[in-house]
Image 1 (tube, one colour):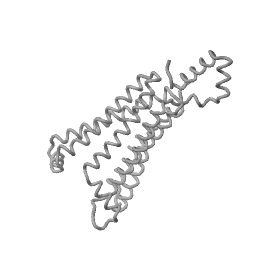
Image 2 (cartoon, one colour):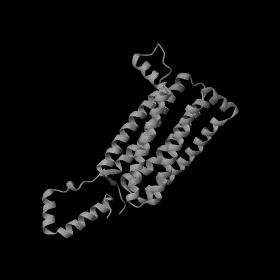
Image 3 (spheres, rainbow, N blue to C red):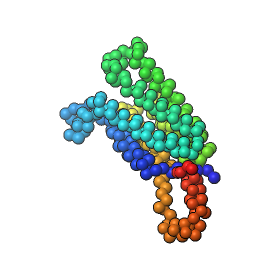
Image 4 (cartoon, rainbow, N blue to C red):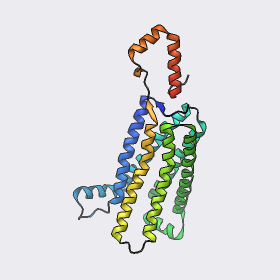
Length: 265
């Protein structure tokens, strides 16, 4: 029988819940950051304050770091579940994905501290060291997408229920993101007669859809792990089973936990 959900400890559950919550909050900040412009006198008080804060490169770096860190924490909890289940192949794939997430984040953050905006613009026109970071990020992203496909196949073939759904959403959302970006590229490049207001509207819709698609896999990931406690067994059944058949009870109890993949003996 294929496993439908992993069992985790209360501590792992807290890490998962806090990571998902912070990931959603800072992803919303990042989404709003893409909509706010440079702070000016014509903006409202809250909009101006948010735009001023988001214009600070240090604050944006912290925001980016929290998003990456929460992704890694959630994937680490999932990796441990795969390790407990003895799925070494899927565990290796998740580990590679975690390394790629860290490398892509590092390649995106380092140029902001190593080079000025003028140097980055000159590198785009004439080449230079900043372009190597960009090339590395593109290659790493392609490998990361390939790892998503590999993990999708592994989870769909090996597991059932929410775990299989997570595998499908992992690569399915990525494909939908590509299709949405391509649709925006077509509208921006090839559609004639589109006004700047219409293009801005399409860009807003695109960013919203990409935001939702980025959240879906991690929200599904949370549902693949549940807390299993021995106290969920009614006390009357628990005491009767111990008194009447202690050996049989504990054997059945261990079998249930092994089936749920929460305790390994």
